[in-house]
Image (cartoon, rainbow, N blue to C red):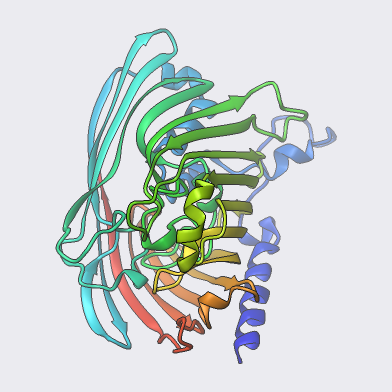
Length: 426
């Protein structure tokens, strides 16, 4: 039965992906040339600015959206005055699980962003963002990434982001707590409401990915740049190359052990047709002298996370998939580390006006020689429906997480059914 569900979902997603753009109501770009003139293929299926903005707003990383805006129309951004902006997002959900039904917060947050131009085409930027879980009584198993490392029930308000930096039209450098270089790729599938992102390695070991540097990285020095000269054809956008470094962060779920130097690097190549391919790698060094003691919880070397991702979207659809390879990075619910491979799929399709159906799959499987992990695995499908008042910024949604996962002891995890609302301000 498990295999049948997977094959059906993958078949469904692939059908969404390959629906011809014309059949979805996407019209070819208008041209003023005579009909006898050939039209370049690269211009025929270019996604509109409105669609690109909608898909950018779906991501959690606001700095990625700002960098894309600089790349798309730097002359317009340069003309903007200095800004100080307050923002917030209310995300409330009701979930029914095998352990009960409850209301909770699903990533609600508020923050402030500032930009000050101190020389031509150069800005000082900063952001502070706090999350709040005033209603959340859920187990962390269902809320990965919404809470800070080591948080417990009662930690209602916590820090999500806090960084300062310098930004130009081609590069920015920031220091503080920021979305990781790894997330530039893992974000391709981190789009489900209230679930998902369980197999990418982003929010590892029950944390927000801050210590290891794959999620909202702590105390990170980071640079993001655009290789503008790397543009072989008019179809490709400039290649972005992102790098970060951390040092001395705690190893999650251990007592008194720290990583040494941690580095992350990623790159995403995009086209005007809405296609992107991304690669990312994160490496957290562990002192060899600590390995004998850490072996008791499954750690036998440095923590590494590698990921490759693909996304493609149009006016009425989106498809994203990632495959991750994780060593000494993820844990079971009993805090046992293991090596394993993950795979995520996310797809959406507009069925009527502002109504969208969504579907996908998360799978994380320990290697066969990871004895300490027992029978642990993550394997679930997600199907859902949402009504969008304004893209991803204002919506109501419902989804079902259909579980085939098991705990370390071989206990099957029950399905989770969710309804909720996301409302971003302003």
